[in-house]
Image (cartoon, rainbow, N blue to C red; front, side, top):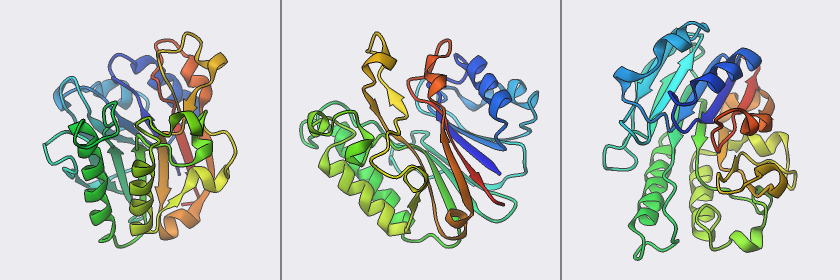
Length: 260
């Protein structure tokens, strides 16, 4: 089974490159973040035409939004409010083999890494704390995917030194993510198959005139797994070429292949 994840930054605006990716890579399941569409306006037919008949949504107008699109049956969806304000940032399902699949869009956290000066940063840290408490209660193999908006390792950013005070790579965020990972005994599949310090970026800012030449990337998108799900992972891929496609997202897709 191939499971992919992609912060698409508006699924309707970028439906052409989503379709291209699905035709090229044929994942069994695609998890999208930042779909930016209410459920009733989601482009169902584009996905059904490619065989993705099973669609679970948690949408929101203009902002946020997550979706799971599958060619295999998925059941028992849930939607946790880890933001504690009803933002559409999570949806989860159970796969036919019983494995849980959780799709999350963690808040970016604003520009200033200070809870008092920037409430959005505090919301991000609180979101991670709620996820950590949830993670402590997990039972059975699970997969957690999405845009975590944190690049935890020194080699997950283009310059560790220059980004230490930049939201997404600050020590307080990295420590919070480490607590989440430890709480569920999660395995970081990206780094299992591409050990640090290998270059493994998934995001490049739109601000760069030539993202490829400047290559100021960060690894913000992740796929984690526990127990038998982690043991079943056999390959992990990132698709850097998608950053150069027409009307690209600032994120690229990631995909893990599982032997189940």
